[in-house]
Image (tube, rainbow, N blue to C red; front, side):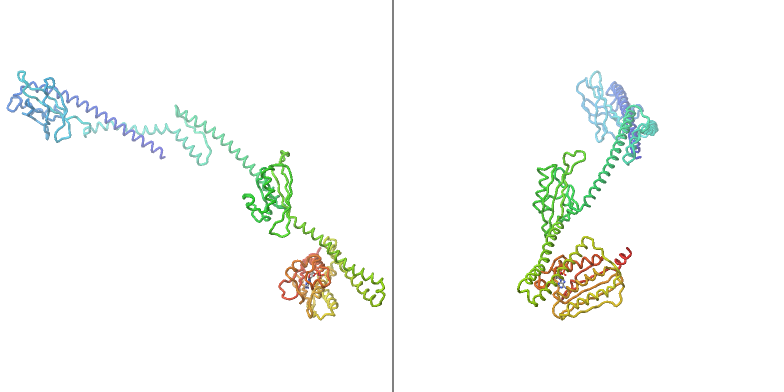
Length: 610
Ligand code: ADP
């Protein structure tokens, strides 16, 4: 719309300029025409006056009135002045148009220039005059001159010329809209092309512009339409390519996500190096291992996140001399902030399925071998402990059997003592072997609990009475606090009895003189809680973290002086966990030790249902 307005404006301005040019040319023509008129009129008049004797033109002369007539003559249009001067140039008679002063004129010296024309400027007036001068002669002698001045015609307009101007302007004004329409029709193809380009810029598809045009414009439109067809086919091609790229990008993302999910799910921490040795992937577990985010591992230099020289050396090796080579490498290191932690790092070359000959990268696996190492250690400790526990009673048995065979063993007193010691040691060995057997069976899953409905208060009371009996030589106080009536629990009564007995026997063993042993049972809607407490030596923080390990006994001298194999609590814990319950130590106790067994009724009920 704006553009077509501009075209209209251009047409109007052009029309006005055309009118201006026409008017100017007409005025110029008029000026030239008028000048010619003045010249012919001036020349003939000045010649006519030159023929009149000087005497007759000066005041008092017969013809002096001729001069007056000139001013009012119709044919003398543009008259400015007529002046009769003597040979010195002094005016002797003159007639002027209103308000005009005759300008001083030069008296021509040479007879050849007596008759002539000059252009003068009026004094006190801006206008110019054309002056015609001729000599006044008498009997061949120069008497003076006659000077006849006409106003120089100017280019200008007066009201009289208005009809003429209207006649010139009217057709031009009438033609202007016609020109405008013609021009608009002429530029229509360009407008249409422009509209198409605008549509395209707004996201529409490109279309051919179907307008007829001839000449250069027609050629341009043809080229424009060819360009559109070409651009359309290019766009289609690009769209097709883009679609393919999007699909393959989606596929790649899907594959990448799948691989990353697999790598994240692996139990090990992993790194992937590309063929130049640069890190391209690190899973979360690796981040946890080095205490940084995987992002940092990928983007930051090696020494920013890893301070282990062996790892740095290994990964640097891939960046320098081992680019994309097929080999595996293993190093072991321990993470310094976690004691006894052992990490084994192994590298595997990654081969492309298309060219299995050369590696495209390297998979670096960091395997935490701490558990394996601990398990190895535990096995070694277990065998050592067991050997020790078996050896001491065997030593005692060996010693007494030797003595019995010797002379000193003949006395009745010694025989009785030896029989008691041997019986005790055999009992201890039996208890040790039973405990070990139970534990091994529980650990390898071969012990199936023989469950039945058990009245826990009765079972606990029996174990409690037995403990009281075994300690009747000690001045301990025994307290038993359990509900009279309890819902029966579905459990293996023998195993539960062993668990409670172990806790009670510890409470007796590690108690101090005048101490107290208390067994409390509380029943809630969901669970049964058994607490075994004593007021003895208690358990230090260090020991508390290890007392449930097999064969662990406190290094405390008092504990070491008391008989034991360090298996009771380990077995108790396993029995309770076999019943899906929990065994824990109450850490808040100020004096003595208190162990808490929690057995969940729901579990028991659920098991019952099975
Ligand atoms: P044992 O009593 O044969 O040594 P346990 O497995 O029953 O083995 O106990 C492991 C260790 O736990 C004991 O050696 C002792 O150091 C500590 N312990 C267990 N019960 C108590 C307790 N009631 N008071 C103090 N220490 C205890």
